Amino acid sequence: MTKIVFEDADGNRQAAEVDAGTSVMQAAMDSSVAGILADCGGGCSCATCHCFVTRGVFPDPDEIESQMLECVLEPEVSSRLSCQLIVREDMDGLVIKLPRNQI
Amino acid sequence: MTMTAKHKIPDHVASSVVRDVDIYNIPGGDTDPFLAWQAIKNSSPEMFYTPHYGGYWVVNSAELYHRVLTDTEHFTSRKAVLVPDMPEGTPDFPPLMVDAPEHRAFRHPYNLALSPKKVQVFGEQARSVIIGCIDAIIDKGECEFMADVALQVPIAVVMSLLGLPFEDRERLIPLVDAVTHGDNPEARGGAAMAIFAYCDEWVTKREQEPGDDLISRFIKIKVGDRPATHMEATASVTILLLGGLDSVSHTMAFFMKFLAENSDHRQQLIDDPALIPYAVDELLRRYSIVSTARMALKNIEIGGITMRAGDKVIVEMCMNSMDEEAWPDAMAVKFDRCPKNIPSFGEGPHKCVGMNLARNELRALLEEWLKRIPNFTITPGKSVATMTGQNIGIHELPLSWNAA
Image (cartoon, rainbow over all chains, first blue to last red; front, side, top):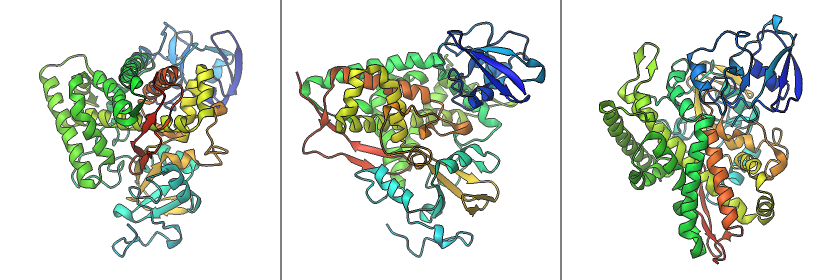
């Protein structure tokens, strides 16, 4: 299991233990993390699983994700859609920051 | 209509799971479609078969709703979404009636156009239309909510999304209404063809003079290596007109009917407007009016029966929203229920792309209306006529209040 830490806009933290190969979005869903809506269920279709993560930790976004990232409420350089981020074993302790609002 | 000899039951369907359910003609559907469906729900197995319109299965639990809508290995949206079937030879309308991987190419322009950021703009546009509608009726002390408000709002938003001239709405409103709620298959089909022809005209226009509107983006869709065809672009526009209008209008009407008849709930929202977003989701759950359908691609054991490849199954969202196991005390509206994964928008790859736009429109309606017309009732002496069918709906909703 790999530990992923979700940090909301106020700095509150919540940890989730996940299997490698799980998406960050799914990890948030399984641990009832309030800041991820994931309306479309993981299809890179809705931009409601927006999160911030240091560039380089995960492979760069593909074209569809990049276009969807332009549609989130307050995009930043570190913006990603968590449904596209697959957890690896070497990521233990990774911090995923969440925006104040998804919609 | 009752079952007759012409309604043949296929060999693989046991008589114990057959029910006489014509979705366009359900006993009690003209006064309370949800009670009417609940009566069927309570007296039917988890998956049952009805021989009407060529025969199809009906999902009767939240669990099967989830399985059918998310299992894309066994179920296809091609040739499947409507009951009865579209006429032989009708092409599949993307993105609604297309499966992966093409589905994604067709859906992507919708995703971008209806993203969280864009939806806020359209929500405000809906709000200004709602304010205009209220301005026009408030001094009269009464209105027919469908014509005066509900049918006016979503079309304004969708026309702007597509870059279509606002004045065309007058001719589109009755057509859109007839597609879902026309009296017979001919009326519904005729209206659908008229809308298709209208969209066809605009796609042609944008092919010649592209803009930065959504129609122009549909035209530029690439499906793998090939460009989308004229027909596919036209179908994408048509689906948006149909999907974004009827469901929102009729949901608005059910919300207002509920609030007219339940002053305690109304007072909660007047006292604390911050509750409105929660009320919107709970009312969406309780009044889930839409249905969709799928066709089995291979034989599958599901809900205690065997579906054969080629069998059709209809998913009435209300069969999930009234499931007591998923939603304890399901018929009660509780604004503090804070429901997660409400069934109104479907699930899986075809989950309603306009769900957050719909939420914004519904929220704007409740906020603006309750601010200015806090106390209202169904007009005394008049009744509300409802209907069942592909979608549940309301023909007319007469509302009254004390004009200042």
